[in-house]
Image 1 (tube, one colour):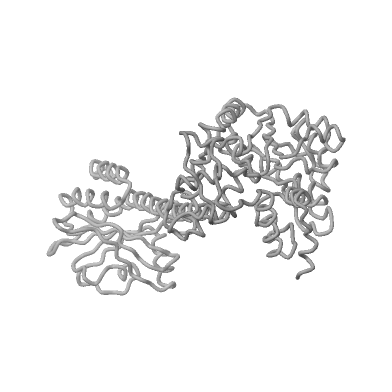
Image 2: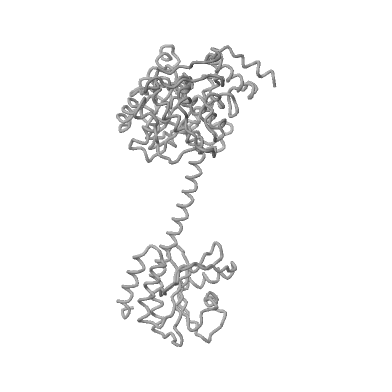
Length: 523
């Protein structure tokens, strides 16, 4: 095509310059007008999955005219015939007087009169389309025009492929945005950024230690009461490390049945035990090149502690029933609410494992020791609950904050979140029923702050007798036990509803003198 060299250089430049094919087609059509007697250039995409032909671009551009996609449905058999013709790669000329039913000619809109050149567009990734050149009446296309049309097929096929990929990316982006909006709605959040409430307040010293250790790969042990936010801190360590692009996997060691711990952590081979119908990758393999949070690590039995120690020492293990050693690169973050040092002294936790995981301990203060964070926490959870429940946003009042600050929060941030959720639901978009959510009698008056700080100086002055905290807690637990018929563990158990560890709940019930067996008899 030496005779068309200058023209084709311009065509290729336009075809590759624009992301969308509509602009390329319009500009190339303007270039062709001076060389060929064309009235219209049309580009169509063949959708073989949906059996239709879609107009995606045309030119030259005309004043007041806008490009609009037009779709024509076809039968599956005709689409297959058309694609078969496209693969042959030859341009066909339909003369003005020719009205045969040759398959490429049936793709020409009936409104187009005069000579029409039809060229197949086929990319290496099997994107199919058609290039239509319509002659300006009364001109006729020549053999040279056919050669030019043949030369145009490759650049237009590339432009059509690029346009198709752009459409796919836009569709995937829309799906991803929809999934993101759905996830945010379920979480009751406005964005997915990891925000740690109190990072500049009561958790400032904790976040300093997170910043120090995140860059290294040493094991971290997070110590804190149930519900204090240990997983949030573990995620912050992961997100600030070089492993941020890798997986972050949380395993609740206390929730895995003892007989399945090895299989869950290290995987198993097919046929290694009854029910092992396929090979199973354990949590360590899934966390390769990422971070594995071993929550409630104090619940691990001795046998699992031994195998865990080996992984920490040399980064290798065997699946249950396997003989091949598997190497992994996993950063371990352990968390517990238990006193592991005391467990080591009692022989319930291996001393060598303790030294391995406690290289860099981080102690999380309970919520009652960082009451300055309560106002911002209340606002955060109120926003989240309003979004999740579809209710009008209501911010906590000064009286609400006084109640929240004066409460001792044995369940920490997890309990705080549940209380705010309950207050939002009870308020039904008209306000926050914090007093009811906490179980405080409604005739209790709450004084305003006596100084600028909410810490320490706020007290409840009741016009009626205020129930002791243990009495309120006991009554609430008994209400939940009645609803669950005395069931403690499981998806619908009391521990799940109260969002605390089952062992913690049992210990609290023993302390409060609650006989949960009696609730089972009421079924």
